[in-house]
Image (cartoon, rainbow, N blue to C red):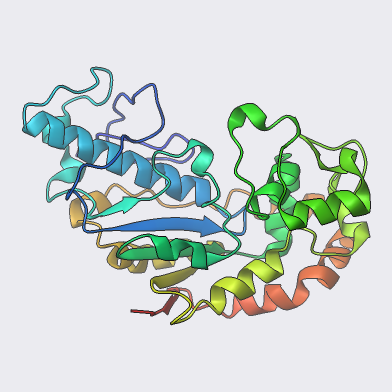
Length: 305
């Protein structure tokens, strides 16, 4: 079958088709969706992959709608979008809230899920994984400075990512008072605990706030939270794809174009981490690692509606 969209980071099934110049969706049409959904993670656990796939699915659905109704559409968007096989039985019923937001804004690593109560008929996916491997992945890709800001609810654009990012959130102000302004200057600070994974592990604290984020999401229950949450583990993500698709009510045709997820950083990071650093990170994240390992392979559904 031919696929009308693809995610370049991982293998996709079917024929790859042209994508628009912009990565972001247009504003949703009134009445086009039944509700909304979001994807949030602790970082380093393939949330970008999920967001890109769902974003492209929504873009393809909008293009097919415009094409089928005779509306003008961006010429470079999709090839044969009126007959896209991935949309044979309809498009996604829910709108990805960060679909048209630069770099997914605060949603990708949202620390306090109660902020999602503003969205009508919402569903939230919270993606976790081994915090030790996840933190190592963040440092390996040199994302650690941006990650600190994201987990402190700082919204910044791609143009603001270099140097000292403007943010007045309490967590950032506390970090700067403890370690100095230079320690929070991105992309990679020259000094402080974010200068390297070794420096972070040696500091001995969860400076990202990953433990607090996990507790906040796991305890997000009615009446504080008015939406359902599906917790998924990166290490068992392939086993929980069906649960995720059912949760988001994704049509069957689109599901067949969802590629298998590869654990790209497992093994590589284990070899590169080193026993001393792993031991230090285990002291910080050991209890969280154990708690996350208890999440069933099929995911954990927190019903609040």
